[in-house]
Length: 251
Ligand SMILES: Nc1ncnc2c1ncn2[C@@H]1O[C@H](COP(=O)(O)OP(=O)(O)OP(=O)(O)O)[C@@H](O)[C@H]1O
Image 1 (cartoon, protein in one colour):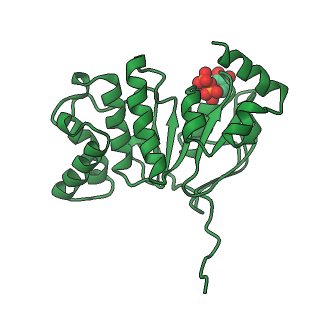
Image 2 (tube, helix red, strand yellow):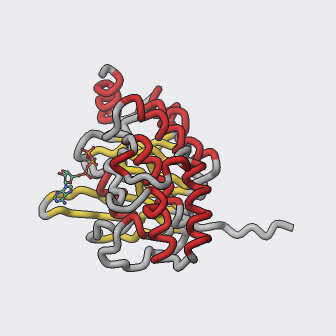
Image 3 (cartoon, rainbow, N blue to C red):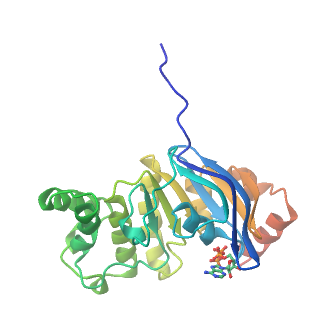
């Protein structure tokens, strides 16, 4: 007998609006992301992609609407560093690792301070995560001693150490030298294959085509298209998406 209950979406945004002064940056955003789905967010500069990520993670207050993670609003956490939050892990363009801590300390900090995990357990989990992202041998180094790609993989491990339900990536490869982009995308693809729920703002169309279950196209603060990647890339419906794809694909 099936005991399945309908699980809430991992990310649910309902009628979300956000203004910066007079600028209406998120316009009536409605979005549901089920468990295990990988959503790539595309759109021209200034269309509200980063603001959407930041709103989902409560780094940015919204003016109206509601955001829930796994059926619940995120708790108020004041100005807690994004890296230290539970439930929603976020990886930024700039890695924002703590410069004066080793890579291992960067990864164990939040589990120890926020989740109150003991030192040995936190270390063990951190080493497993660093191994998973391919930099276990760099654990005693400081961020500045690592390449950009390695630092970004450390930032991913740090976010994962909080056992998030959802991972948000805001242009995680845009600040990297080209030769390091693929190693970070490979790490993200691995996470996607393991079933992590992910919202990814990126200009990497290869990743969108390969790893995304769904593409959301934003323009002027609105979700204009919400499609499977194949449909979006081959038959965009709106003039705005056609225009956007025309520009990026001819680059
Ligand atoms: N803190 C802020 N104060 C005022 N305006 C802001 C702030 N942050 C973003 N904006 C404005 O809000 C709009 C949406 O910005 P956002 O960074 O979300 O866009 P984006 O799609 O992520 O752009 P990009 O691809 O360039 O990163 C832009 O017009 C931006 O200038």
